[in-house]
Image 1: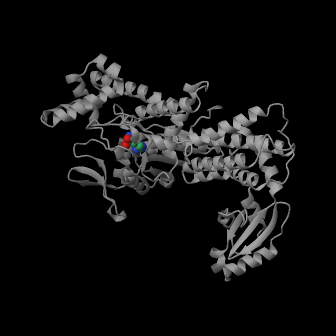
Image 2 (image 1 turned 90 degrees about the horizontal axis):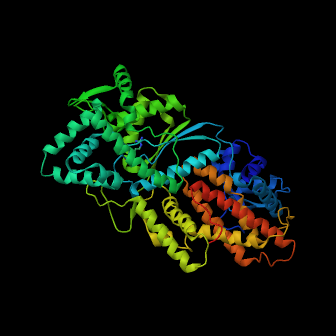
Image 3 (image 1 turned 135 degrees about the vertical axis):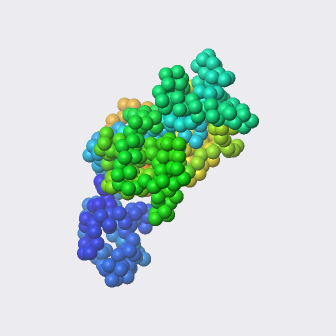
Length: 562
Ligand code: ARG
């Protein structure tokens, strides 16, 4: 049940919107105060009364019933106590009926959300810097689909630019087929790094690279086929990681895809008198909006990242007719997105308001920085592998007889990397630590997974007990706290979608795991008297369903035994 709406509908006020009331209703930190609370402060102005008086008046008028059993006015808050048995019954029935779909709702109604994420650069390493965009985007993709939207995952490949000229030059000078075939991205990256090293003393290399890039643009067969081959190799490497992380795309249309779609954009800009010449380049002046100009064409006539992004946005609107188009890209590119969103708005695209830059912070490892040019890169694949190995070692120590240890270690290790990137508010910079990510008692995925294994184990011991439809009685405090939280899952998923914040789901999962463990330790489950035992098994199963759903939205698997 949606308690917030239920309560809001019964609050008798004039001059305030029901939705506003529903949104204001919160869960007090101390449940002794009440299960839900409405702070009355912000209504004081409209109602011309003190918050305390508003609370008193509302309390006197609120119709308590079988759902809300008590209302209290305390210091400007209106606190509500829920009928505990009714809540328990409701939550258990809903989870029991919906199972894997618990938390799913059709609020999207098939509307399209384009999601530009991961968007790797061809022939460049898939490094730790791509972790957040990949897992955040992947989680949002699943969350939106879960809510009845049609998510379109787009990998806007970085497959256009002078760096490919450099790579061809380096390949022709120092590379060969076997070397690159065997080494994949790593070999390509080494060539790229060598190019930059040698170009420091031999500036002629830069000209050579420019010439090769021009050849690609002109469609030279030899250069183009090398480039296509580099692309294929990169995607092969990258897809291994996508498989591990359960990441999917509906389109791999990258920057080069828009090569022939930029001219119409230029024409339109010209026709709308938005282009200005500045030192030979074509720009859109954005001074009025407090931004540096958006450069559309360089003085040598070549296009830019922003030009291609504008063509891409227009193409996506035409192709998918999106409700929103999200770009999951690091905050370093804030200005870039603000600029081209603005230019599209100036062009009169009313849908420019539906473009959203979902910015996130940096991820680094405990031991420092990296740069693609210099070569000291931390490959994401290595991080995942190391996490899986460490997980294997920990599991071997904790549970030497564990079956399918490799499989479990994979779920735990991959989960640790994903959760490490998703647990914090996305805009925060994070320093990834293997030990913290794999701490069984921390705010980690492995803690949640371990809790699930605990629930599995309880349920497997309950075989033969018919608990599925056990009758529900007044829950004890630990049961109630847990059930109330389980009931919050659908709202949590919706809030995560609304704020583009999968961390809400991650934090929620840890919260549920903590409340379940308190329940598990304080209340006997299998040893409880009959009647109570059955209801506790139902609660255990409902917890497991909810945690599995939460983790699966994040792309994390749940082993049955650990
Ligand atoms: N390839 C870019 C990078 O690694 C990210 C592209 C993001 N998407 C976009 N439409 N600009 O920085």
